[in-house]
Length: 155
Image (cartoon, rainbow, N blue to C red; front, side):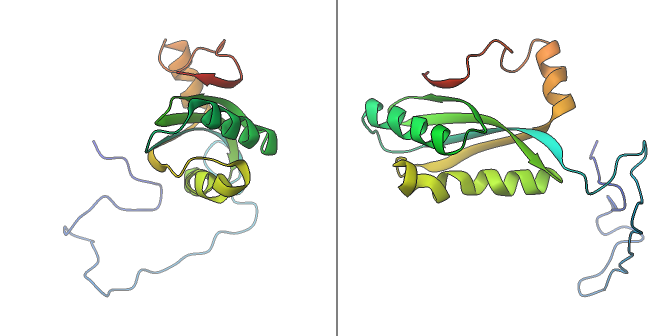
């Protein structure tokens, strides 16, 4: 089953689909319009982000120091785990929607590589989930335990 955002269509080439070059009518949303249930579309929400990076081996002490510097510069970082050739950063991001939270996460490593002294690794994974999904996973026994210590730790 394919999920579709409200106001979009799941059709691909079937009745009602747009041919290449066709314009889609845009509609405006009046100020104060709400999602079902009363939540405003523009209010920020909390998103749990897991960013995974990997690359050439680097001295573990340097990786740890760089992640500690990143956490110092950006105290929103919840926890980081690292090894000589990969790391994982978990944190909460406040953003309007998943797209905004993911965009910030995808810029994090590159934008702070120089200032924090991070290794020249590439992003190899990104997960962004909303707060209710995070708590459902924890309650079901999936995902990180709530007692996971905050800070920078080896794998």
